[in-house]
Image (cartoon, rainbow, N blue to C red):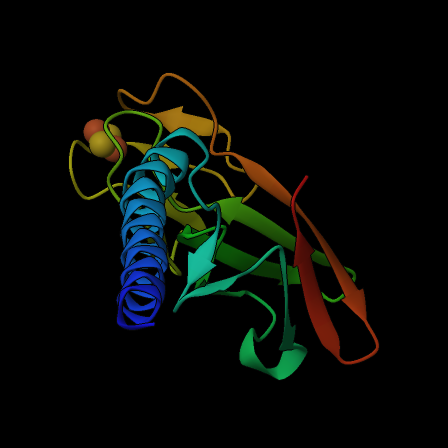
Length: 151
Ligand code: FES
C-alpha cells in the first residue's frame, strides 16, 4: 500500500516537473522567435504606439498659404494649403541626406537647412543637391477636414 502511494506521488511529481519544463521551453522558444519575427517583419507606421495609415485634421489648422508639419507613416510630413481648392501633402524628409525640410512662408517653398536644397510646393527640386522630388501623399478636403493617405 505504501509503495503504491509513493509511486503515485512520484508519478504526480514527474508530471508536474514535465509540465514546468514544457512551460519554460515554450517561453524560451517565444523569447527567440518573437524578436526574430519583429526583425523580419517590423511594424510600420507607428505614432505613439499606434499604426497610422491616414490622418484627418481640421482645415482650420492649415490656413490658405500656409503649411503644417505632421507625423505620418512614422515620418515627418508637411501639409500645404496653397489655395482654396487645393491641399498637398509631402514627405518632409529631404531626398539628399534625409534632413527635415522647413517651410519658407515668404517664398512659398520648402528649404532644407542642411545643404541648401529647395523644393516647390509640389515637392519638385528647385535647386541644391537633392537628387529627387519629395515623396507625395494623397491629400483631399472632406467637409471641414484635410485627409492624408498613402499615395
Ligand atoms: S539633406 Fe537636404 S540638401 Fe542635403
